[in-house]
Picture 1 (cartoon, rainbow, N blue to C red):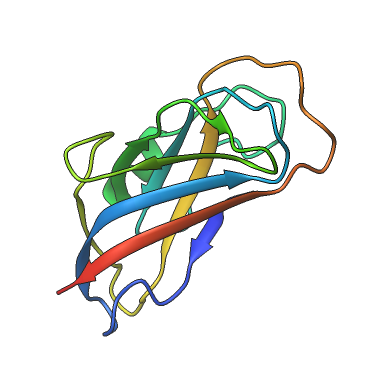
Picture 2 (picture 1 turned 180 degrees about the horizontal axis):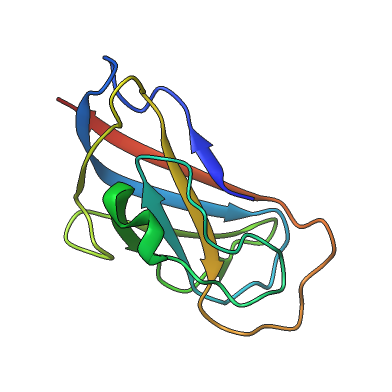
Length: 132
C-alpha cells in the first residue's frame, strides 16, 4: 500500500522540505536498506508486497517528488532502525503539495533481498518537515 503523510504542510497546496527521516521496524536483526518514493498525488505504481516495485512510473511523473534513500537498518535490541539527516540520502527534499491538498504520499521499498522477514512486520516512518 502507499503511505499517506497527512497535513505535511500548513496550508492547502503549500510547500515544504523534508529535512530528516527515520524508519523503525518492529523486529530486531533487520539489516536491509529501504527507500521511500514520494509523491504529491496518490501513486499508481505496483503496490503489492513481495513483488518487484515499478516506482516511479511514467504516469506519476507530474506528482513525483523524489526518493529518500535510507542507510542499512541496524539492530537496536528491540527494534531495527535507520535515519537520514540533511546532506544524506537525498535530503533536504523540497516538495509542493497538489492543488487542494495538504498531504504527500510515499511508497516504501526494500533495496536488498532479505530472508528474516516475519509476516506482518510493521514499519514506522517519521518525517521532519520545514513548512514554507
